[in-house]
Structures are given as structure tokens and as C-alpha cells.
Amino acid sequence: MSDLIPRPTHGDVVELVLDDHRLFEELLRQLRDETQDRDGLRRLLSRVLVAHAEAEEKEVYPSLRREDAISGGEAEHGTHEHDEGHEALLGVLEVDDTGSEEFSTAVHELSEALHHHLDEEERDILNPARTEITETVREELGAAFAAERTAQLEADCGTVDNVRRLVERAKRRTR
Image (cartoon, rainbow, N blue to C red; front, side, top):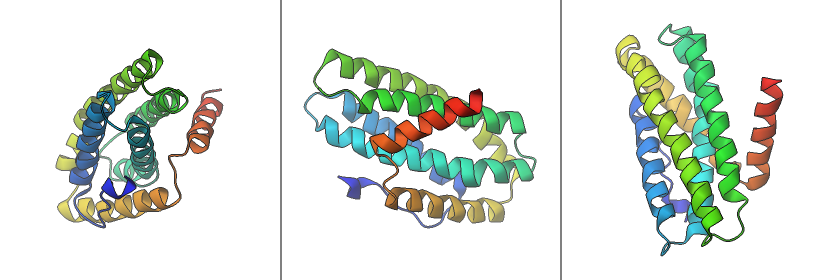
């Protein structure tokens, strides 16, 4: 199932990020379907969601700040929402019975957190990237984002142990 994750090597960073957002939405739709391989889908979503967030935090947000396309507060808010998403994702990963009401509730909570983040990121971060960053810089940033995202995928970033580590990292940041 991991072969279903696209691994672009280049492109406009805005389009690459949006492609992942649509993939998240599709995986969530499938995850709500009781006839699907929910365990496989949650592992797939975990891998691509974590890889995406880590690549954004390492490559995209800092670059957009340097280019004055977004403020430090906007980047920090995006990171905070990634933290919330990781916590909700951990809730999905830790449920043993993917056919249970507990699992459905956890998927709902992840879906709510993720949709909120996608909406805000598309309005408050990607729109300025479209208008404030040159096409050449968006292409360079796309290659850097894609490379980091692929490195994260190859490091198996979506394991439950790694997601727990990310949740703990976020708690330390907020103390």
C-alpha cells in the first residue's frame, strides 16, 4: 500500500503541497469506509502526513519567512497545527479495533484537525507563496520539499513510535 504515495522530485511547492492535501482528504474518505483496509490506510496516512509536515517545517516555512511571504507567527501557527494533527493521528494509530466506535471517533477528530489546518494553510501560507514568491523560488522550494518528504518516507516516519516522539516533542516546546 505504501506504493500509493506519490514521490515527486520537483515542481512548484504550492502545487506539491496542494497535491498532498488532496491525498489526505482522499485517504480520510477511505478511512471512514468500513469496507476498506483501515489498518493499512491509517499507516499510509500516517507516513505521508508526517513526511509532509516535517518537510514543511524544515524547508517550506523557514524559506517563506526568509522571503517575507509569511510572518514568524504564521509559521509558528502552522507548526502548532501540525502538532495538533500528530496528536490526533496518534489517537487513530493507538486504537486496536479499526471497526470500533472508538476508531471512528478518533478518525473524526483527526479529520476535524486536519481540515482546519488545510483550510488555514491554503489561505494564510499558500496564497502568499503564490503572490510573494517568484516561480523560480517556488520551483527550488518544491525540489527541497520533495527531497525532504521522500527522505522522511524512506525513514519510515509514520510509525506509532515516531508519532509518539513527535507528540512529546510538541509538549516540550509548549512548556
